[in-house]
Image (cartoon, rainbow, N blue to C red; front, side, top):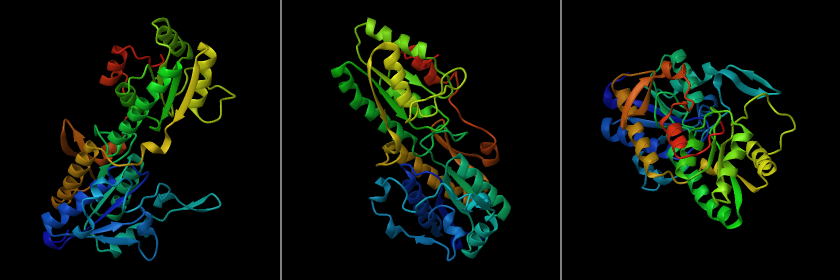
Length: 356
């Protein structure tokens, strides 16, 4: 890399949006410019910005970062979740390898390093591009799913959990008023972190996650126990990829696991049920304090790692500290909810049914 004061780095956001992305970008710009005297180039719409000609970029200066940017949801750079340069869609179901075009775009900008903010899939792609192009790359983990390995917290997760807890806070009074079972379906992809955190924080009676296949008998028994104790309402949180134990069922109810579950609970218990699918409400909105703080810490450390000559690393949150870990190791792992996870034990200790 060039001398410290003459460097230019790039930053991009890739994959699905979430709250806290702008806090990372802001921290990168502040640290790079004020700490090292570097230029920062924002790459627009994820990898697309380096694939299109002319290149789609914007120089990021301190003037752009008023106090409001820290509070904005989404990403001021734009993002894209179907822009894998190694398998880029070109129509009619066909794809082509455009990785060389991405690397050429990086070189045209004269960059001395790249910071990519993404989930596990995006970080794997960007790390592969950096290895092929021979340029320094530092990853920043973001995803509402919190399934990026080797970090306790990814940017966006805390705010998403807060949105789900708020939904439960709003559903509980109406459930109690009408003696209903309220089913809340949350996101999380193949991991149950959102459902588990939100279910405990929101006082759920049943939490269903992909890592623990559920039994309708167990769920119905939990509802009946509540009814026997005089609780004529219940809250059920189900992750979007939760699945029933045993072979897949046929003739499922349109609308996903939440709607099917609501119908089957009604059939099994006689309880009146209502279903809410929270959907993309979990991804948008103002980032909460913890997401802003971790995002800021991640952005600062990512720049420092480039200054130290690091490459192929990801910043991570471990034991209330920001550390850096090998992206090769991150990419070789997965991060589901463990069956001995503290919050699994906590849920069981609270008498919450996990479906098994």
